[in-house]
View 1 (cartoon, rainbow, N blue to C red):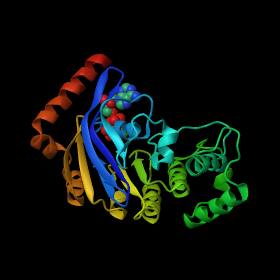
View 2 (view 1 turned 45 degrees about the horizontal axis):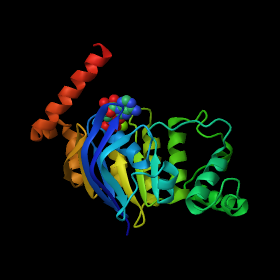
View 3 (view 1 turned 120 degrees about the vertical axis):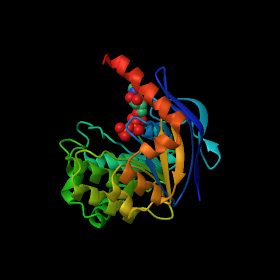
Amino acid sequence: MSLLKIENLHVNVGETEILKGVNLEIRQGEIHALMGPNGSGKSTLAYTLVGHPKYEVTEGSISIDGVSINELDPSERARLGMFLAFQYPVTIPGVKVADFLRHAVTNVRNPDRKEGEELVSMREFRGELRKTMQELNIDAEFARRYLNEGFSGGEKKRMEILQLAMLKPKFAILDETDSGLDSDAVRVVSESLQKLSGPHMGVLIITHHERLLEFNVPQFTHVMLAGRIVETGDVKLAHELHEHGYAGVRERHPEAAAEEREESKKEAVVAGV
Ligand SMILES: Nc1ncnc2c1ncn2[C@@H]1O[C@H](COP(=O)(O)OP(=O)(O)OP(=O)(O)O)[C@@H](O)[C@H]1O
Ligand SMILES: [Mg+2]
């Protein structure tokens, strides 16, 4: 079983240090929930894990099975089995869902493929896509839509789930927005995720939705505050946070809470408020 290990990770965006020493270990087959107040650094961690160029690792390491991936670009990380469902997916003009998936699948399965060489066989790919879409109750017409163009919030989520099903990553990071998804869409995501996860996938769920965790019960819940993971517990911690918010966490970690206040003061100065 593979191990994704994050050690003493420090990350800057521009001049500002956002992550200040994150430690986390995820094994294939485990479900982890990452919680924490707005602006604590959850999405920053997700983007850093997949190698977004804006996020600069200044200290510490990310490794898979003992091999550092710090220097790898996003497509190389994808080949090693990393997957991120984006909080705000992008629209790529003129690219259809099926084309996009065929390229993504080729990148992951044929890592030695050179520019201009064949993609995974069309016939094989079509069959697999059709079957996967049936299993996930996604309408066949969906594959012919342009990627994310005019997608509703729920359709964007379906797209992520479909990508997840086709790519079968070792480590999936799901960074969920809470706004704009109706409860049906949340149910679709949580049920599909339950179908797809298993002993071969390690999952990091970033969410404030209880529903997502109800179907995908995390063995570990982590709380991020001011760029560090300050607490780790089991699913009970997630329920406690849903019910009572972060006041208790701040009380238990006064130093991190003070840093959080400092940061929001600085932001207010920058924003001129
Ligand atoms: N690309 C960026 N440019 C500038 N600042 C950034 C960038 N990415 C993150 N930050 C800053 O880093 C801090 C952490 O942001 P992040 O998006 O990681 O928080 P979060 O925990 O995901 O919050 P939320 O729960 O609202 O999604 C914020 O102060 C944010 O403004
Ligand atoms: Mg976020």
